[in-house]
Amino acid sequence: MILVLNAGSSSIKFALFRAYGHPDRAGVLCEGQMAGIGHRVHFSVTDGAGTMLVASDLAPGTRHADALGALLDWIAQQFDQQDLLAVGHRVVHGGARYSEPVVIDEQVMAELRRLIPLAPLHQPHHLAAINAVSLRYPAIPQVACFDTAFHHGQSSLVTSYALPRHLTDTGVRRYGFHGLSYEYIAGIMPTIIGQECAHGRVIVAHLGAGASLCALQDGVSIATTMGFTPLDGLPMGRRCGSLDPGVVLYLIEQMGMSAAEVAKLLYVDSGLLGVSGISDDMGTLLASSAPHAAEAIALFVYRIKRAIGSLAAALDGLDALIFTGGIGEHAAQIRRAICVDAAWLGVECDDAANLAGAARLSPATSRVTAWRIATDEDLMVARHTAALLARLRPSKPLPRNIMKSPPIAPASEQMVTLPPEDHVEHTLDEALAESFPSSDPVAVAIPKPSNHPL
Image (cartoon, rainbow, N blue to C red; front, side, top):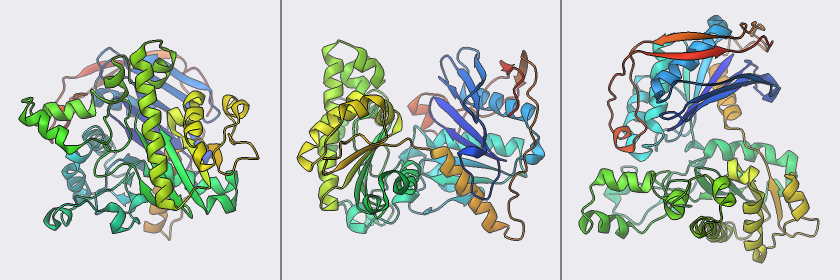
């Protein structure tokens, strides 16, 4: 089997796939997450059919290392370690060096550590997860799958900043992110929107706590809204999005803020949360009657409108608009507002289809079609990991099903004592550091699920 890990600033998501030559959704053994890390941590697991296996809370204040250790303990209790072929990680920033997935070694780790300042909310947690797996399973290969890789084919005209060459030659350029999501959409959209449309001019809106847009031509990334870091582009849940660099100079020179304070402001205290003063969650803002909540939503939609116009210009027109991500897949009100704003391009919205969450959101009369397609970054990581292993071991192709059906232990709570290990605090300024202090041993209650065969 292949374990997929997506370690973020406040959650650790995972999925276990049967090790097919080309993993698919039918091969999901189980998936879940540790959500709310640093606060009230909720551990949830479902099987491949969506049946709940685990739903429980961990001790308040459980940190990343403890949550990850508890997750790996649970997996070890349920599955045979000998069946674990590899672990694939979603890694946000691969820099200029990595244009495709790689097996992780010390050289790769050194490069990922170097990139921490370019993705301080994500990169430290990816590294912590890789280290934790390495300590527990030193003989099992780990694969890094990069969100930046999908955009590596963009032209230098698109990726360049108007800065001196001694800076741009060192890698100061636009990279783009959410690449695993865009890659999945690019691969599946021909079967949903049709071959002709999929090979045309498409804008994909990945809208969630992190948000960006990507212009596709023939399924290839042409341009995207994020640049050097995941801070750029649209306003997000807590991130500011595109900002005049003069604002940063003003905050430092005139307001007396330190670099760490500015970083926390832009990465953690801005976006929907900063504008609304209420929440970084779109669902909460949509349900609120507060004027500032409405202002935050309006700004989010307006900035998307401008970004769509910019990307449509890069494509010399538009044939399809696709929504994905947490907000894109579930917030019908936001989808409708964006479609209305894009009416000048020829986008129409069928209100009934939109409210029903249909795949096609536009009527037959719409010159530019609009769609809702669920993304699957975990599946992309599993596929990349399996493909890389197959290339490395061509004489030993991955078996089609190496996973036995392990019994799930009877329902009971087991106290798991986690050893001291590195952890990453949920604060930005500590995330910027490259060394992490050790935590004390923590006892975490992990409920075992009721009998349920996978």
